Image (tube, rainbow, N blue to C red; front, side, top):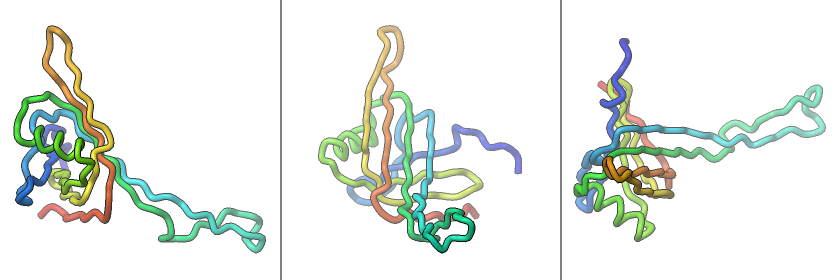
Length: 137
C-alpha cells in the first residue's frame, strides 16, 4: 500500500438527527489509543518478574484536531456539546484503513488567531464508552 495523504483523514460529528458531518476546517487530526495495565505480580511470580492480568485494564482513546474556524454547523455543534458537557457521537475516518466510531466528550476546545491571519481552533476528545472499528472495504 502506498502512503496516504493526511488531508484524507476525516473527523466527523453526528448532528441531533444522528447524521454525520465533517468537522469544518480541521487540518490536523490525531488518535491515541491506550490500554492501562493491571499488575498481577505476587510472591509466586517466577523470579519476581512482573505479571500482567490480560484484559483487566481500562481502554481509552484520545482524539484531537486543529484547524481553521469557519462558523459552520459542525463548529456550532461542537460548541453546543462543549458548553452543555454532553457526549457526542464521533467518527475518525482513516482511508484504506477503516472507521473508528463511538461516544466522545470534548475535554478541551480552544480558539486562537493572529491579527494578520485566520481564526483557528483546537479540540480534544476523550472516549466516553465502547468504540467500534470497521475495516475499510
